[in-house]
Image 1 (tube, rainbow, N blue to C red):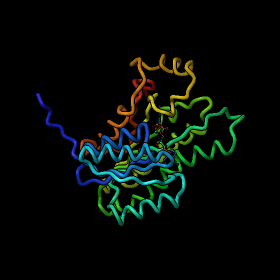
Image 2 (tube, rainbow, N blue to C red):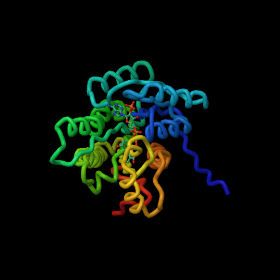
Image 3 (cartoon, rainbow, N blue to C red):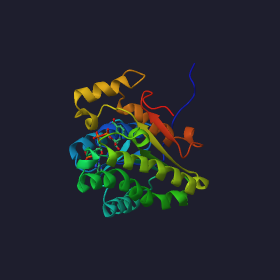
Image 4 (cartoon, protein in one colour):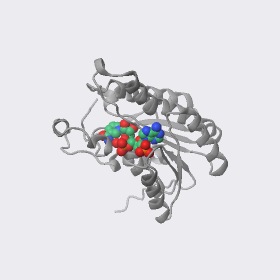
Length: 254
Ligand code: NAP
């Protein structure tokens, strides 16, 4: 029997950071398929991002490409200002952009620390700050940030990444408290091991060890995360805020 559940994001503007590849790409495609008009932000992967825009528009959706390094406040502010004039409001923000620069603490350079904190955490602050005023005025908004199970558990060799991803969780809960009364929700998604470029370079033995810790017995796919972003962006999640939702096949339970 049909459930009658239908996610309709038509009339909503969405910005997905780092949407040319991986989880960001899958999320942009899902939001657009549900009717949102989507900004496909990228930093360096221009042709991949162009393909995402092409996939959306050829399926009858609406999308626009925008290059910006989201670790730089001036680039984020310029992006949001241009979009406000030429395109409309960002109602749904998906803070997805992220990098790794793994190293053991005793060897981790300041550059490795800064790159990860700037790209994975500062960007969340810059993008949220830039879109929040309009969300407050419109009394509707969705802030969805991609954290990680590593932000919950920690991981040897990833102190910079874990700090950024845990930071996203504290940030999300604070924003949820600040703006909940204005019908704006803020939630985080904590993926486990998702097959994308970021995990492709891990040594085979590390991947095998991780697989043993996944009760469902297989790695996740970008759509497993994108489906949660779609839910959080929708009216189905209108009473969900300040939460961390894992997409990890049961890797971390708490
Ligand atoms: P990915 O395939 O390597 O994609 C990373 C994305 O981030 C790319 O689209 C990249 O854009 C973008 N990006 C990096 N620096 C940027 C910057 N300064 N400005 C704008 N965009 C930037 O990795 P992924 O797995 O899809 O990761 C997406 C998010 O999920 C990240 O936050 C990651 O930490 C998180 N995550 C992933 C996993 C996993 O297992 N895959 C697990 C937990 C959390 P360009 O290519 O254009 O530079």
